[in-house]
Length: 153
Image (cartoon, rainbow, N blue to C red; front, side):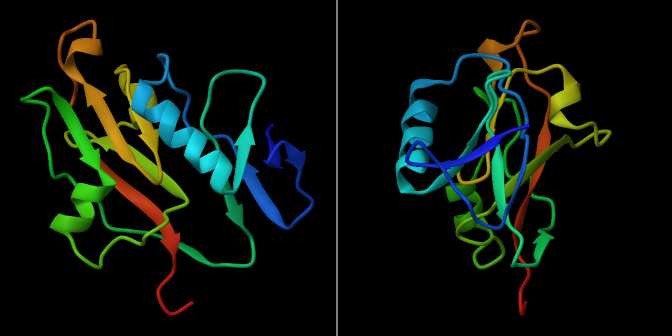
């Protein structure tokens, strides 16, 4: 269960909160900065149960999943499915402010949360799995999709 807050005050508005994917390691410094900016810019959900990034979805809009995208593979430093890179590679296909992200392995469609890798996944940032953070020394290959307002809705 999460609480919806705006600038440390409970928000009374029509929102649906749901718990997002747990972060299995401390947030990298860049993610701390991004998450702080997101908090200052508007609403967020916080869970006192565990370290998790959560998403708020306004219920007065209709949302649809995008297609799946896989622009990187883990052969370098890891699998970097960053939103900014996906916008460049697939112009006009992903909204400016996705409200959720889903990541699964490319080989078998296993959700990232069950695949055993340490990763970071934030709707407005993307998905990152860094090879040197893994016990095996390598990430699996992932594809991502985003939840955006439906076109024409």
